Length: 199
Image (cartoon, rainbow, N blue to C red; front, top):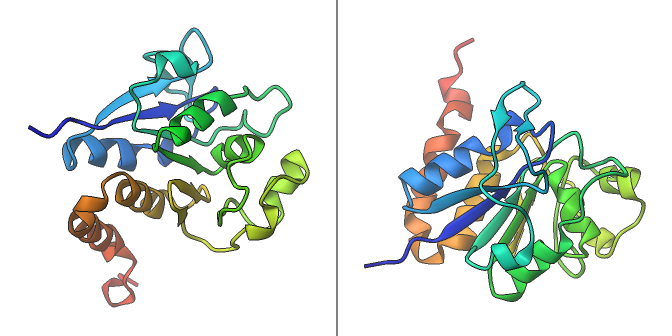
């Protein structure tokens, strides 16, 4: 029997409601993954929409050694000077061959951790990361595109691209299920086809 892969979702206060649901839901329901909610906060965190989430565990590497992947979800907190340092968690996950992804403000955590060095990546527009944290390793490899970018085990995306963030993340985590991911990509793209426009 195939062992379930475990994905840790990192949430901080004022996280973006729309950036994680497609990935978490499809990973569990369509790919048989297990998901856990991580947060540096000891209590519940609140989304931009006001929903409260109680994390399953913290972000220390030693309590997350079972993770096959980590997805850092965007939040209004990430650009602030008080943003938590989760570099040890991200680096430990990557070091053991895991997948690390960041969407929207979550890409700032990856940039601060130095994970974009030598890797193509994207975020919320050219110069956006530097406008929040100054220069960072790998900034010259920024891709100014409206969709997610995958470079080996690193996945990044602007906040408007939860669909391609999901498919790129799952493709990295499940390379043996490329056909299933392709079907999912086609399914998500249907509503954006111009021949389906409803006026």
